[in-house]
Length: 226
Length: 115
Image (cartoon, rainbow over the protein chains, first blue to last red):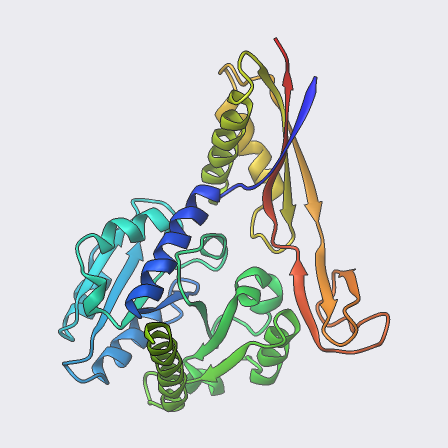
């Protein structure tokens, strides 16, 4: 019997693809954000509101993943920006290969900001790197403020937590303070924005975060070119 | 839920590593899973068995080592294991802590029988 040490990532093939995607995003100056949440937390609605706020000449695109249907792509296509639906046919997450395949149909040169709306799931998508700059996790106030402790992986790996549907706070036993504290227990440095897409409350916080990240991305791209 | 895909990736990488030794037979695969990896050990074991049963890999043993969350104190560089996220540094009591381990999903080793 011989034991051969391997020391390799199990998902090394996905990791390889993600690294190549990251290189391409870096080279073309594309800011890629991977949006992750449970089904129904408001990823598509957040994207609708976000796209609706962009000027038509902005170079924004969306990849949206679901097990079935083109519903989300149809909702998002109304805003005039390029949108592609990735139907996974039952797979509970997006992986690097799916992103690579979808991007074959677009030129990254014409995309400054790429949103990936992952399959609704707080568990599996956290294991798959898609080459994104960062993951963004959404948590709606109807889900419960203990979710960061129950599903720590995704909260530990996301740089931003978006607490959604805050207009419903008077109707649900959800403590914002507890949710924030739980998220920071799992990930002390996590940034948090709180908003309602229905009333627009707090939406400027999300837009400000986006602008900051886009500016930082642009600065990095121009430094790289010099 | 995605453990079948992960078990499949483990088997593929394991087979590829064993195939580097011509004529050898794969008898054991060892992996490491961190508590933050988002992978359930029982489901993974089940998936591994389901995928290998009745194949030439039927007898391959599967060993899972669980890895705890490991934090590093950003003030004194002390590293420590913890299950509680809010634990301050046991050495200097600082609360400025960074995650340095616990999200492992690694193939640690393969064991082969030489021909």
